Length: 142
Image (cartoon, rainbow, N blue to C red; front, side, top):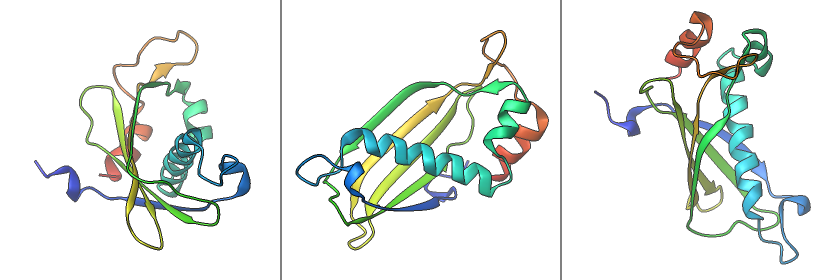
């Protein structure tokens, strides 16, 4: 099996705006989570799988685990590179990894991961298998 490092990264750029920061001009911790979701949604969309596709398939993806490791701060005016990749599936869980960097220095500021579990929108039960079109797109990302 290939190492995790060999899987494709998707790059999402964000310029730090005032509403991303606290009063000291440092990015507020919750902003990183929002950026991670933006990167994940945009990556899926770039691969041909929109949020509307999940809704049409009656699949919701709640977060069941979230982790962040803070290395250094980003500040007002910085450009962040939010790099995202999907880990190969183990069961039904979708594990995403993130490396948020300062674009000017290429230094990692935040390392993160999010685990999502597909559930049926109506029954709220965990799906043991994704609909084939959704699964095909996810496999193409690896």
